[in-house]
Length: 422
Image 1: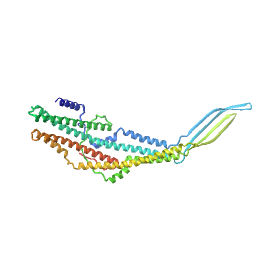
Image 2 (image 1 turned 90 degrees about the vertical axis):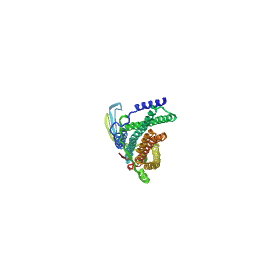
Image 3 (image 1 turned 30 degrees about the horizontal axis):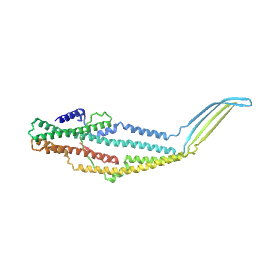
Image 4 (image 1 turned 30 degrees about the vertical axis):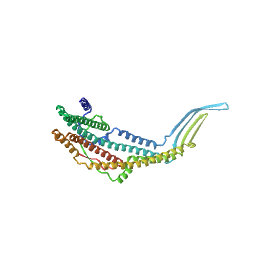
């Protein structure tokens, strides 16, 4: 009894320490929660800033080099047969480098691919964010249901324990039954606490995604999932090759590396710098020179060849990455589709009111056990079966939802795998 009292005190402390998970605000649908998160998530600013940075980099990459202005000023002294003269000498020149035609176009193509990659990164983040938010929203409601079911059964055991403790056990059988009830109550209190902690974790993560304080209240309206079958596997694979964001990213990177190779080869031909200048000297007599200078770097080093070799190596790496991404995509689509179909088949065998029937059976067993018409073993089995069935139903729904949303993210097909019904 001392151990039981200690455990019950710990349970009471946890109940006080954990915030109440009962909805304190007006309930909202999971779709509204997902929309709010996708619209107001603080991390969206990071990806939007990445797109702005890529656009600014494109503007810089497509701009011509700035001209260079050079100015020199000095004194000149001339001595001839004992005569000398001094005066001012100055010069002004402007240098402009001209690159070969087509080089700016290649740089612009590479910069455009950087923008496309940044936009794909934002799209990938939004898709992952929406899927995670949907799973958490449904998981929060499911965890609260599971916690409520565990608390309901634990309350039955607690009431029975209090009744038994008020009696004077008249034999070994009532004493052993009391110990069984006490043990079941402890087990159920643990399951209820774990369900409360799971709901609290889901609530905190949802609030973090919403950009609000982690302890802000949130009530998710009760809803029932109506999962729809996925298209045929051939259609899924074809759509994945066309729409999958990760595979599109790998293909864009491969295209970008192709432009990088062309640019590296193009840059082996040096640019030409044109420098018009004007100089004047006033030492005894005035001299003025007006002309144009040309300068070209001499490609005597192997830097250009090394840059081309480096770009070619990176292009081969991008080819391998794209090939591996396609193989990985096909494997993941097939695996996820199989899991989704298996979960749908499992859910198809459920009765619409399965959870309600198990709950009624558990309540019926409680009433008849108090009347002495049901043995203790049957009573305990029905209570545990009710909780196991609720947990299994909720877990299967969550796994099916995760698989359906993952399949939609992989293929880009909006086949509505999770229609919510009130």
